Image 1 (cartoon, rainbow, N blue to C red):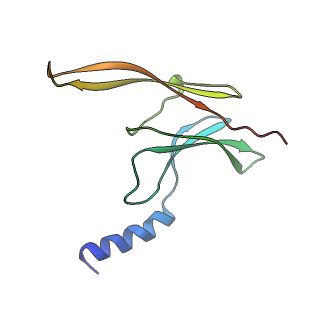
Image 2: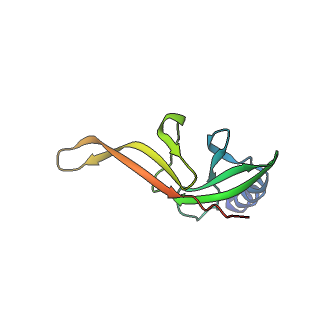
Image 3: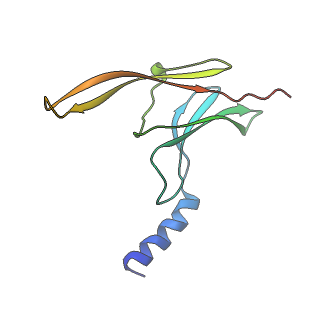
Length: 114
């Protein structure tokens, strides 16, 4: 198998056996980059909470236009909200320079009472 058909077929099988892409890991929560397939939009993330010993419960999700590599120092969370502080680089075409923008992503966590 060669060509485009072989690439699509191999990618299809690798999609199911590839390990999850963990972007942030803490003792309570994990943030995964969701893999939606070939033609999906960029950068969907899922937030899970550890439950019992080996199970995880989904507590939130968000989309972002850029690929994020998260660090422990920029993430703050409590029972209701997750805040991610970022410094993003943007390009100004008029001055032909890059500049930094401080940004905050706030995600409301979906915690259900039992």
